[in-house]
Length: 451
Image (cartoon, rainbow, N blue to C red; front, side):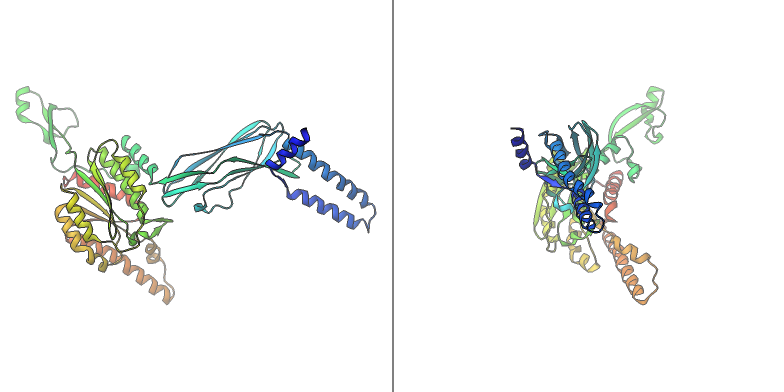
């Protein structure tokens, strides 16, 4: 009965011969061959030929005597954060009464192109351990994990037993909520300067009156209320609170210009991650945040609000955005803005320009939008050109390449000046600094009372 159960386990958990088994058989064959020359070797070859199957059978009995000798589980979040390192933990438990050698293979999603995840380790008897590794997705969508396979062998190392422990599972990759949490935690602890967020002094008194209170050290002496001071015989100051419920819309261009990659992520995904963080900060400032996307046709529209579920609505809308490969129609965007955004708002337009010609095609519509709202055009510096402009040119070909790179970099700066000439605010930034630059601009405009 035990032999039948053992055979049944062999079929359910396949048995594999390890390279050491074949090496010993090769040595046995070599000894038999050499025994034609040195007859003394025949005895050793015969002993090895008899011992190998016995040892392999013994190791099979050791490995297959327990049905669930090894258990394992993959622990990871149901949602991954796009562009960030996401942690995966593998919990492995050895129930054998002897130390064993394990080869752990976790079938990561094919999008990561990981073909060498092969962790080898030695586990003590009746012990457990946790393996940790990270994955960095670079596009949104659904990713599929395969099986968790573990190959176990005893110290003899002649055969191994395979365990298939985890069923395939799927995870959704959302816009960078890890970056969102990082900014949120630093904002709570007043440490946003660690990320490059500037402390911006408020200009003027473009704030709403709150109350009159007694002066304490540190209050602005310009807010002293002299009439109240005369009545009370001690210093009294006016206190103000920031104007609230201003509208902020993140407008994202999904056209072909946003397909350009940087560190394996498209500019569209950088814009989506930045929009998520900026919307959250706006809501924390008690402003209203909304979203609008466009390409050659109108996309998603999320009306500006500051309700508790607004960030969830914006997150779901950003998750479903797809790239379009046609030229974006800013004139159609202007019509949508005019029809759906009635109140004067701050519009953060994430797009990209590679030449002055492309800007001039869209400039009339941008000027119309800027006449009704406070428009900030966010476009990207070509970071690949930076290394070309800084390289040392020794050959004629390198001189030409450097000159062309400097021409394109200069044209980017010219685009920024052209926008400013028509009263349109702009941000020219590298993709990795996009979120910090956008938040700084929002705080600056809010401090200056422009929204």
